[in-house]
Image (cartoon, rainbow, N blue to C red; front, top):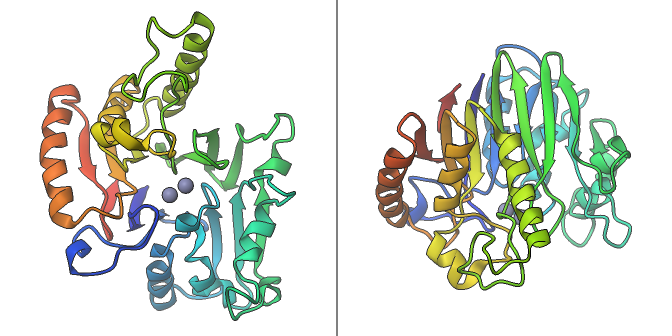
Length: 314
Ligand SMILES: [Zn+2]
Ligand SMILES: [Zn+2]
């Protein structure tokens, strides 16, 4: 199994010469295998590049499983430009979770971005190719239910874990061909909302019950990540940025992710969802610093920043 990055930017596409090396497209990853349906994670604007590639290299009709972490724009706004959805005879299964707000499920949210006010092509054009699956329906046994697993294709097991984000978001753990890989989508460490931001872990000031709960939630996330060959994590901020003004925005930071990789004994760690304000030079500077930190903390783990076009062998 290999994983390819088609979009690595968080929140907003950032085209232009200052972001050309890491890339300005929003989130999209592809799992590369020798056989079976095409596996894609998230449909940020990177998915358009992937579509162009597929149209040139694959023979239609297409058989695709798309796993969407959540319905924030930067994870779905490339979808209307994903050309295979318009290719007759193709099967595009799109999995995700609806925000359950105003009664909207996953399908409704996905379809809404292709309505008259926003996009010129009608949803009905896709009815024969695209099918939506909402984890709220698939895993009814749990309220908001998305901690479960299913087979996305022969030999491909997908495990799900809710993350800590302002809208329902799932991390995916994909296991196939004897390898495993996690993409967290957007995720912020769990914290005690009553403590100041610089207190990033539960302390003696936290009452025992809350401390246990915060620790338990973070421990469960680490258990989910345990031992994977590749962990791709939302790394929007530095710890200082996070503590100064970004707590509660639903994103993680370099220092925390290094600790997760350490505790979960990860083999490869990729930082992604780069903050849209960062230039390539900014990212180079940050990576120099955090690679040093990672070398000290994670000597046996390969650590790197995701960039467009990068292929990682597991
Ligand atoms: Zn995002
Ligand atoms: Zn988000």
